[in-house]
Length: 322
Ligand code: ADE
Ligand code: ZN
Image (cartoon, rainbow, N blue to C red; front, side, top):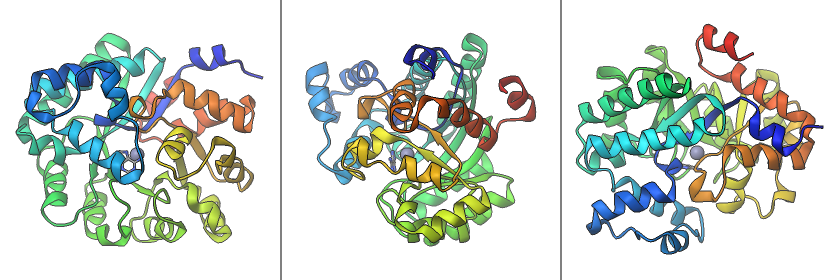
């Protein structure tokens, strides 16, 4: 058995963490103080209250309010480096961080400024913490102009280390996004939509069949349809699982109800991730410790191997980790 201390110290991989959602309360308070018109509270106890979600839609509203705190490239750099430092402190060696550009650009950051801030933060993480950072750019569930903004970044001004296109926000029909994922595929980018979180197994089917998902964010509601479980296991499509996120957004009622054991029993490849850790009062280390409690700590090395195997890391980075 592996102890909590062993889990805390082991080199880690993070595949599903949102850029804005990974912001610590200290950084949020600091940015909020610089942008008082935002209405985001600045003192830690009020922030805790602000972070206490009533449901999934409320969570998405809080998320948008924090995105609006980013109005200059310097804001973006500070937030990003702070979040990468928090990962490095947990011995994360490789991260694919999901950036949703729309909320940031709406705050007044120019597209070039966003890309430069991400490039600079990525270089700082490699230099200062030996942390390899790749990016996923994420469409926030709207077709048309919002999605085109994301595609412009993918097609015309990629940040260094862009590896995949994501799809988050409210879980609208995944098939609506087929054209964008086709364009991303033509650029050599991976497909990593959220599916099977707020919506059921039919959403996972669409992600697999229409969006040609390489991995799926959450995907835990596959357990509602045994045929979808078989499809995932046969195709070896990996699920990025975040137990505390699922409890906090009320997708599952308690940790004991979490489908993780059923996913493992069905042979679906899984990794453990943190999603929006400070907003959910957790860390990647804690998610791995919770997973150890749910399915046994002997599964932890397998989760880490699954994560690196399902990553878009270069062969060099994969070899250095394994
Ligand atoms: N954006 C940030 N976290 C998310 C989640 N858990 N689901 C969908 N969109 C998100
Ligand atoms: Zn997510």
